[in-house]
Amino acid sequence: MRVLFLTALGAMALAPTPQPAGLLAEEPTFAGVRVLYGPGEDFGSVDARLIGEARHSIDMAAYVLTDRSLMSALGRAAMRGVKVRIYLDGEDRGRGASAIEEIADAPNVEVRRKGRSRDLMHLKSYQVDGRVLRSGSANFSISGEVYQDNDLIVIESPHAAARFRDAFERLWSRPDNQPVGLR
Image 1 (tube, rainbow, N blue to C red):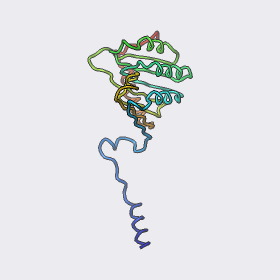
Image 2 (tube, helix red, strand yellow; image 1 turned 30 degrees about the horizontal axis):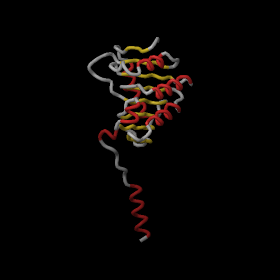
Image 3 (cartoon, helix red, strand yellow; image 1 turned 30 degrees about the vertical axis):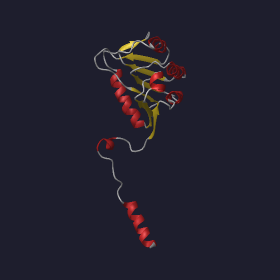
Image 4 (cartoon, rainbow, N blue to C red; image 1 turned 60 degrees about the horizontal axis):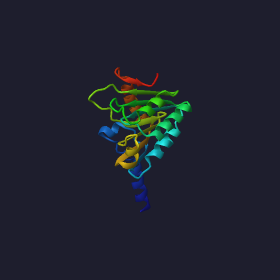
């Protein structure tokens, strides 16, 4: 019986591991992922921690950015020497516009708006230091983070962060973008 067990164990160890197919074959197989659902889970503390841990860069694409505590965290990161780039949809110029203009004038912060068009820039994502991607359905607003039914996904993966950064660079370099602030 023992020989049979050891033989079976050896056969399992030598058996090929099933490989992901389709879209999953393009993605890394190992990544730390945390998924939260609101309302109820503290999205703001997740953002504060991720931004507070940044050492080199934050690239954020935000359909709506009105949460002043999040903007303050981005400003503190910039004061620590973190390069902060924020890309906004071109249509949201109302709520939070003055706070966005204030942060846009801070050292180490650059803000651009998508040129006006019928197509929205609807991302709610950012990458930190090329190692972590934060994404989800929640706008960067009190209502999106506290009251609405949304999800927030944090992926600790240089590959995922690089994929976002590639997309961000395409958005950032559009010729019709409009700079925000004095720079």
